[in-house]
Length: 61
Image 1: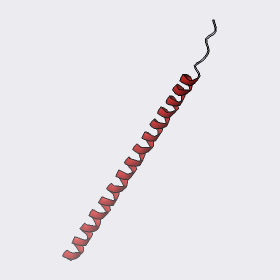
Image 2: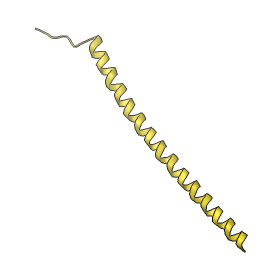
Image 3: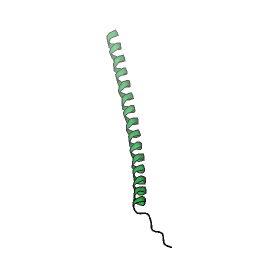
Image 4: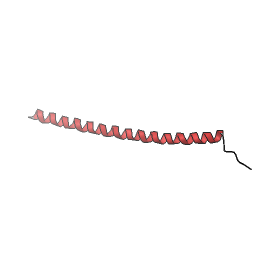
């Protein structure tokens, strides 16, 4: 009976570790997606700045 309880405890620990790992992966994936969105926005902004610097709008006098 002691072996059974020990095995069940190890199984529970393994399940908890697995669930914790899944949560950590999910958090890291969400963070990476948010970072990607942020970097995409920065890239769009810098592309617009570059276009402006290459061909600034003409000013009419």
